[in-house]
Length: 203
Image 1 (tube, rainbow, N blue to C red):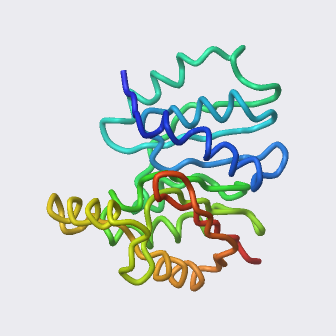
Image 2 (cartoon, rainbow, N blue to C red):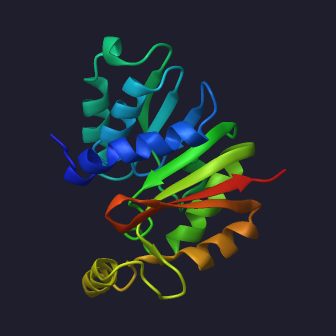
């Protein structure tokens, strides 16, 4: 059974942030759903939410099994937890149809290759409705200046494992997003030196 201690720790603070940003009866696409803990928890807490989880590779089958095991009676009124879909951000044909109110991804930008981050931004820009939000949770730095020594150490550790991984530059990410029609509207501090970057799809 898939289980993420990080998801268990951060699901409450992220829920509080989502309540501030998501419209009523939001349709959300999650990139890199992993264990599905966020998907199931948010649907159990937010009425009218439609949540589309996604994963790639071998993790997808396990995620589908875990989400299928979530009792429908445990979901908040009107919420729908859809079966997880396969989605590699670099495969444009795998992205679902446009019309989402939000695209959410937690702790993925520093794990995916650096070249995949612009692909994530471009895909989100395609599937978000005008005014829709891209919400990215995790550690970020500003031009190489980390918010904490632990984030700098984490960045060095990731790069030692794979030079393509690493904590991303929020300023560079926001600049890339701007060229795709995604405007930065918020950069919120979160527990454990994480941040929530919020970008809005402009018409």
